[in-house]
Amino acid sequence: MATVVAIESNAFAMDQAILTGESESVGKDHTAVVNDEKAVLQDQKQVDLSVLWRQAGLIPGAKLELVQKSNTPSAVSVALQLPSPESNATPNGRVVDKFSSESSLWKVLRQFETRVSSQGKNLNLTARGVAQTTAGGQTGSGQLFYETPVLNIMGRELASFADFQKTLSQLGYNSGSVLIRLSFRKTDKTLFESMTEISQFFADVEAEEKEAAAVPATTATVPETVAQPEPDST
Image: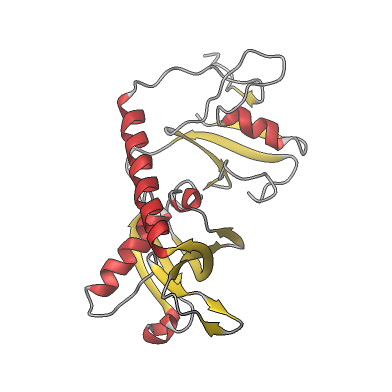
């Protein structure tokens, strides 16, 4: 049976830390109950616990469910809305495909690149470089600076490497479809520096995930903010 959590005030930041295991409840010896095997749902949609409650679309008094995650990832239809001029080469200015709910945003971008390239088209989303300009003119150094992807999902901007590591499931998409609006933003890092950083970042993340998967899960106690189902009296 699912467990119900009531968010009664604007103190969700503290409750959120309890649920994710980043903090203990004040004055109580309790630890977290939310981990990679569990999810928090509101109206059958997973809540992203990595953001503040306002950004998660929650209101005071919201009723949440703590449920066991399915062991089988489901398919999510992802539509990627491309900026100009890339949008001119695709129907409706977007590309659409199905992905596992456990796919990270970075993997979604990379697979869109691969699948479009297999059709004889060039789509560079993750390794873009632009020449530095001064007063509207291009410098003579020939140095390219990295253009990072900027994703907008339901008004929420995701633009960091940590953001790109989030899975569709972690963002609340375990089935159905999602529209991702893409734009690009020039950074102050060279293309070479950024590609080196990207390779190292995602290599470190994969190593941490493998290490975490090899550690046996521990049993967690339940905080007082979570109401346990009453035992069957029959």
